[in-house]
Image (cartoon, rainbow, N blue to C red; front, side, top):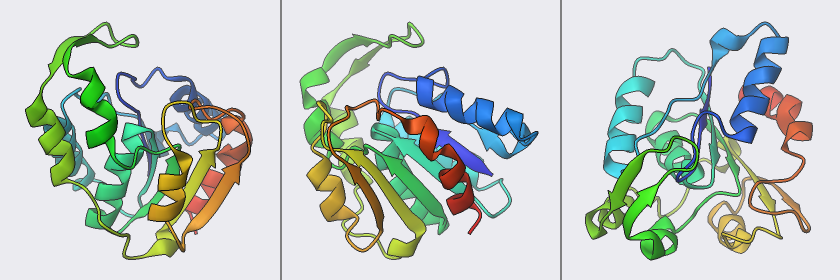
Length: 187
């Protein structure tokens, strides 16, 4: 099973999630793919994911983009599964502090309020270091205008890493990596 975890204020309708979904449909394997809609609050998102992932049969591979990458890191350690982290948030408790207050997701039109307690929820699931680098693949672009790609390179030292010059936070050209991500999920 391949599970795509979307980022902050994103959703299952995000471009990368839909590209991967379409690829799996073309392979007649849509039953092996899921992209759950995550709550905007980290504690709720992790609780939902932990409960749901515990019901899935192995092997499991997570694809996490941005904040979804941070979640995927925590969950891959907990469930001892593979994870592909695409321009992942590494310290979202710092990055999201500027979003404290009322927000509206552009993908879902969902209104919510990010509070300091939600920043604490992010701190509570920080992974100080990965235990099995061979289970991870970092995909980063140096032109990411939202997150510092170097933090991912450092955090995922020893893991497979593909760092591409330029690009942006959306990870330009993601579709070219989909077959390789699928292969990585099954190795």
